[in-house]
Length: 152
Length: 152
DNA sequence: CTTGACCCTGTACCACGGTACAGGGTTTAC
DNA sequence: GTAAACCCTGTACCGTGGTACAGGGTCAAG
Image (cartoon, rainbow over all chains, first blue to last red; front, side, top):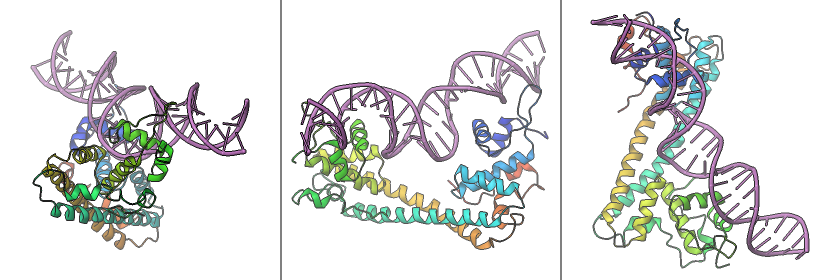
């Protein structure tokens, strides 16, 4: 069992067999040597590579970003500053997403609290908050303001 | 100017003209009446509808979910409990995403702090954390454990 | 030496929320 | 009466991360 087939590697790493082929096409894992019949044969280093990918994915890195991290890993003389820069950029991205979600969370929680959940939709505070409550005003001043959360 | 063309409506609502057509195809906005030449003619209620959609999107609702919210809005005798259920489900979803992001955030922040950002990749604590540091152990026990963040 | 489980390739498809044509027709201002 | 600026339709495409065939070939057990 020093080498594995694609399916064995996939099972061992908890991914689908097609995912292996997909990562190979994306250049995340090298083209594996083949058996006489054309079967890919993977060694233990393929498991390490998939573990790396899984961990990086769990931190929110995209596949192109993981490709760059793998390339840096493969090139020990490369620039450590680049690794840190990728990590800090991802940290900023994650924090920005959290801030967006926090805005949504607070409004959703408030709306859910305001709504009894009983009776007809007519008069529901959630629907009223979403609906354009400015029909009396001129349309001009109501288009770009008044969103429930702020962006940008 | 009591009616607008598609482009005028789009500009007024801060979306692209193709988005209007896209929402119409998805059933989020009704099919507009047409001019003799076949042009869509929109009234002020179309602006209201797009404002509703924009607000719901800002809260994280998907287009199918927004479709359901709009249908409830259009049917004042409908079930207010359904509106609340959709809101609470979205709240749960948003909180789950925030928890995922918080896990990522804490690991990314710790890794960024540990990495000097100077010198070669060789020895970089970020790359070491991602790489399979268990090559000495048997592969069997290292595949499904040891992720940097927990899921599920 | 056959059978079933696997593997190979290329290609199409999924959800998501749009965006971008091509090849026409209409409207409006000059 | 013409030219720019818009509109119409259908359809294809974008990025993201895979998943699912079809139509073959291979490998291992019995």
